Length: 322
Image (cartoon, rainbow, N blue to C red; front, side):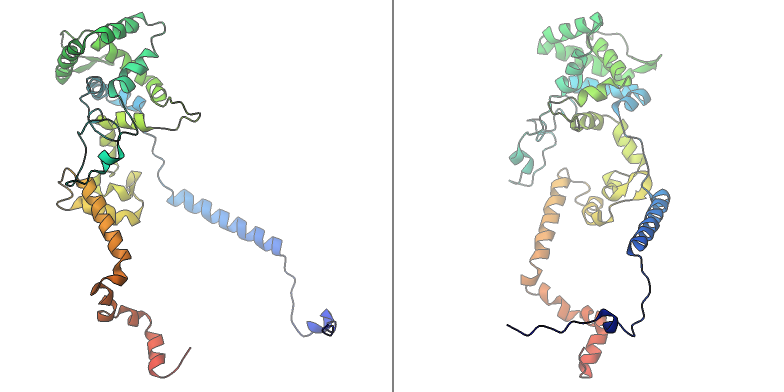
């Protein structure tokens, strides 16, 4: 066994060393309060804008003609979402591809949307209590043949080109619209009450947090894109890196949104896929820089590192080491 170490007297060990009382808890409390005050002040001065959420209710109140026009296009399966393609429908209206590269098709339909049923018929069917007129209109529409439904909807969609707002109701010239006019009137009333927002959030999950259907419905009209235009959030306005209210947002996204400003990306029908492919190639290229002849030699040709580490290289030249 090793010999025991001599016992050290603390008073002797620390003799000659200047000491001062120090309250660690007090210092932590002061630092925490100071940081909290600074954070609260900066959050009040520099916080993101508190812009109200875009809702179907606000849309129906501010532009009822646009709302009804969009709802009619959903019911007739003529909207962008109804014809979009994967992941929402089996169509191909917005499928982007580059030759055999078709990621949307590969992924398939996994957020299924039936525009006439999800956006119009199903919400209305849950609102027929004490409304015999609506119940009758729904029965008439559902029992009619597809050809008859198409005739009513075609006539009503054409009449919407001359629609006017009369006493908060959307009025169209007379015509053979069957029950469609009643359906649209009741849907507008439901939307203005805020009920449609809630009904489109209904799902089998405990938490109703899936906003896919309300957002898709909003995106088909002119109201939602109009809000984006005002807030500088469209792709042509570098919207991916903006916050609402013209505040700067995710500046690191500049490389993604850059491509949407230049040809051919800003005019191509498959621009989104082109940007994805471009960013994928750039990312892979960045990973392979150490293995690409010529590219990996750029630091030798442009010795920026010597400018940054100039003090080190001066010491090396003088034979000094650190």
